[in-house]
Amino acid sequence: MNNEHTLKINNNSKFEITMNIKQFRNKYQKDDIENQSHYEENKIIEKIGGRILSIRKMSKNLTFVDLNSNGENLQIVFDIKKLDENEITQIKNLKRGFIVGLEGSPFYTKTGELSLLATKINILSECEAELPIMNRKDKEMLKDHELRYSKRYLDLIVNNNHKEYFEFRAKLIRFLRNYLENEGFLEVETPILSHKVGGALARPFQTHSNALKNDLFLRIAPELYLKQLIIAGFEKVFEIGKNFRNEDISVRHNPEFTTCEFYHTYSDYLKLITFTKNFLIKLSQEIFESKSIKCPIDFKEENFKIFDFKTEFENYFNRKLNFNSREEFYNQCEEFYLEFTRQTSIPNLNKNFNLKMKLEKMIELIIESKCKEGCCFIINHPTILSPLAKSHADNKLLSERFEFYINGIEIINSYSELNDAKEQRERFVEQKNLSENGLTDNEIHPFDNDFLEALSYGMPPTAGWGLGIDRLCMMLLGLQNIKEVILFPLMNVNKI
Image 1 (tube, helix red, strand yellow):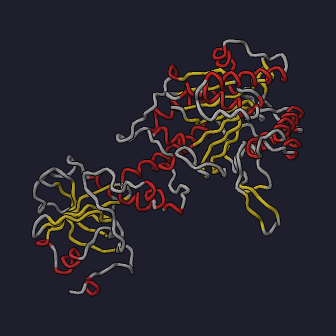
Image 2 (image 1 turned 135 degrees about the horizontal axis):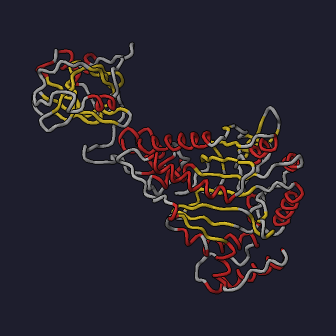
Image 3 (image 1 turned 90 degrees about the vertical axis):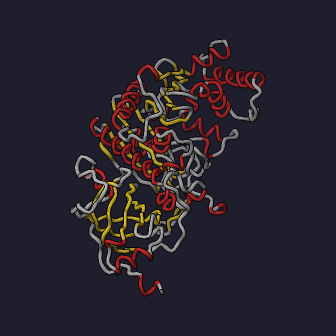
């Protein structure tokens, strides 16, 4: 028999369902319909749509199908004795991957599984490709990570549990947005394309505008635009959006990533430490509703640790830091680095690093190494590492800044914003001088006259806060690879 003449595909009209699989499961609990081994007496009719994941011929008359829609599975039962010739022919032509519309009655099998006894079938779309081999007991059918990330549609067809990651991500962003709006913040949008880059230390992606006859850059951070809105008179603003950095791709980094940045006038970094704790505690209480997803982090007030740069360095080197002058402090940091390289056997400590790079490496190995577990704040970094942050009230060589880590991964960067135009200009000059001593363009903050002009009009005391949404989502789900929570991560096409 030629299948081309017998397979009927309903391409010409839509198939209207009465409910989706999740709604079907919620409606027909055992308490709501008669728990019966035989289904002949059941007169309820529903219409369900979805994709066939597996087909099992149980006997001469019975065929079982696993139907999936939006991450939910439902068992479908066909009894040939109850079907006309047309429906029997359609069943014989079914293949894994087909999208079908079904009409039938709910019932429970002898093993207690909620199912649909199908009496009519509409084949809505064929599947010409071969789906990966599937087993009802397996949680993951497709385990090749490169294939999963590059063909996410296939991953989500066969690995139903992975849909939970992205439902959770949407819930996280929704909670974050609602939380900030309830705190009085206004959501705004700032440019992604710009003539210059700023707001972070990173290598940008560069493109060209034919209309403007100029090179443009994808933003590495929205910071300077958001600060201009603070200068303009907005008191609380935030933006959730994409940033782009032309740098490494790893289990923690994707060149295109999502952040939330906000700026809060008449606040400082210490208040934002409290804000961060409260936000995460509230988040963990309200967002983990699914029984299959448990929060792996214990967000309790007593579990947050704080590590101060000055205290940690003085304890490690067993002497006081010299803050008499910028020159003396920098010279002492150079001496500390030489001592550090002699004391440690950790590889890749480059004696040719400039001061900024040396400080970053020592902070990484002395302080960040203590943040491998739990929730940790690192506070009061040297100003040379924080060109846009306000100097500490008690020490002009340190900044009012914190970095927040969960299990060793940086999630949040925050500081009291430098709102003195003269000092900001001096910081930019210092960064420019660093570039003349070995630093590359992506390791210094570029000189920005436009931002300095805006700052010269006056900016109220302000605290800023930047959250990596992809990383936070990854940590809250207990995952090890950031690609798991990005629907379409950037992949190396040469490896696919």
